[in-house]
Image 1: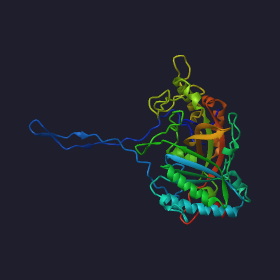
Image 2: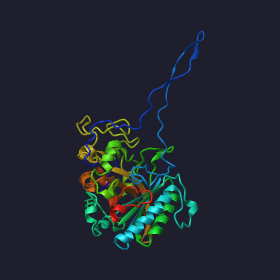
Image 3: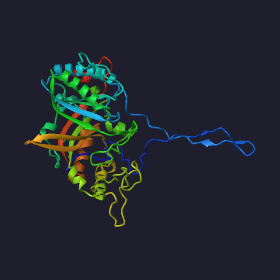
Image 4: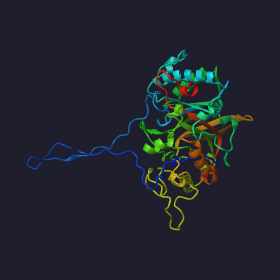
Length: 417
């Protein structure tokens, strides 16, 4: 069985548990204005309040992001329709070629995210702003094997240890570098990825590529998306101060200011088995209703889980092995992660027969892999009802540096302190 917080409860590090507080969604508008008078009887005017419509959430599509912020785009920015992850193996594990590649990529990223063609672009017409393009770069564990860099690795940065339900395949694991390319449309993602892969050829070769889609908007505004099981997926992602505590280390190495870590887990899902499972059983496996994502103890999606609620027989309303319970911060000493899910379908020919598999490319962001992701994942791996329908076939970890200033380049202060 697998390894993802497929649900709402990514947990974070040293943050105190949420408890049984209700989580709030978008805030409504405050106050109401007064309308002009309306004639009554003999012409007497009476002021009537005009209801103020609820606040409208801002659009999250057609955006233009900058790589020159404190944090790289693609971490807390909304998940757009299409994302491709490409991991690379360095041809030479040395500071000079790695520095040259990161300089070149930084120039490419600056142009692509602004909607400009890169230097020597053979298809400049495809460059376009306002397509929510983000490019996020990460460094794999081998980078920190370079002379003098072992002590620079972020605290808690390690490979995820083997889990009992893993069925890992080498072709989906590891990587010295990774780029996450995300945008509103597949054409933009394909274009930007090709430019980055082309410019890496002298220094690195692709080790694996994983592409996924996500329906995280409605009318151009953010909503919680669904995975291929039909579940509302990601309801419990942290926000505000909880998000800050979840993602950003409190005392990082100087070069890692504004950085965080990424775990990529490729989760294969048995959709045929799931389709044969009763809806009642599916909801108990998750601990949430399929129709709207509300917890079995609540009314709407963002209601807090009542982990103490019991039914008429004295049994927990949210079963002890429900995914929502196993991954909930209240049962993980307040640990949280920030999750991004990407649905995938992959077809390959095996012995002359097309074989199709489906699942979730599960991206987990956290300040410390050791103190956040691993304990939560271990708890899920030990006893989570979803393990009967899912298993991990890929796993990789990366350190994501902060953004870079104009005229600078990604991770320069690590490689050229």
